[in-house]
Amino acid sequence: MTGTRFLYLNVGHAIDHLFMLMFPAVAALAAADLGAGYGELLTLATGSFIAFGAFSLPAGWLADRFSREIMMSIFFIGIGGAMILTGLVTESWHIAVTLTLVGMFAAIYHPVGLAMVARGGGDVGRRIGVNGVWGNMGVAASAISIGLFADFAGWREAFLTAGLVSIVLGIGWTRLTRTDRLAGEAAVRKRDASPSLDWNRVLAVVFITTTIGGFIFNSMTISMPKVLDDRLAIYQLSATDVGAIASLVYAAAAFTQVAVGRAIDRFAIKPIFLGLMAGQAIALYAAINSEGWMMVAIAVLVMVMVFGQIPINDTLIARHTPDAWRGRVFSVKYVLSFTVSAAAVPSISWLYDSGGGFPTMFTVAAGAAVIITLAVAALPGRQRTALEPAGSGDD
Image (cartoon, rainbow, N blue to C red; front, side):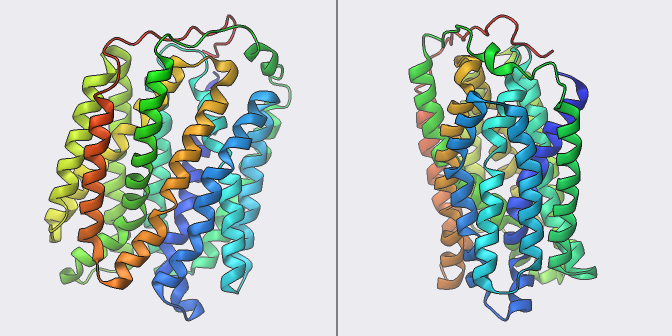
């Protein structure tokens, strides 16, 4: 894989998560602009997260059947246009529709982009880990960018600017891949290759941990700026200050993926996976009643464990499925993950408005992490991987 292609795929992962989290991050600001409540505005993003999962399946199928390069062009340009529309509309129901469009185009990235990143075998864990860091930089950018726009511009300007940048990237990607030597990649992927002998068992564990882990991931990434705002309220920090702290929490934790990616390229996955999930359950439990700067420290631990899990599931898929149908396997994974994680948006809204608050959310998340730990224990101890078809490597 050329460095330029890998860079585009990494940037695409960053904007995918950035764009999905921009409205939840700006909901309080948009509520003041539209004269609505925070919980009411936050629920407008529900459709985008449902679409984020549901449309992963057709995206992966189309990419496996036709062209991953073309699907990525549609991703960049389509999501950019949807972001611009969101910045222009004025009615709440209009925002719900345009955010759903954002989710539809955002659904393309994971089954298509990750299948491209994983192609070729070799140090797949490292590549997925690096790509994951870029995705988490998008999560981090959502917090600080919205704080900056809240203090110095407006939430609409954030959406308009982001949309224009994505369209420009889409034009660049299209020009880069127009005469790409992998234009006939569909024929390569159709060559015979078999999954690993343990693939049924491994994928069952991956899908269980993905489904439950998707709820934890979305709960933490969506609510963390507001959690820190509440738990640091005594210090009377500005929106930019809180956004910067949340971004530092995400950024500090994100690089865990590189370390985990390198580790699973060298050592057995199962003990690493078990350690991360047990640590996640403990950190989430500790966050229930933490306040002030202790909450910031625990937030870093929580996000380290949450982000560290990501390259493991994706590497398991890459190792145990042939490239010919890997896009579809990734799409099934993300249908489960993002459809279930969509429940995090109304759940957070309900907890916040009804008085249950964030302690209940952390309690539920800690219990979910315990369930994932038990599922990981069912992984086979020695995993035999699938063989790539000849000529499928990009490195």
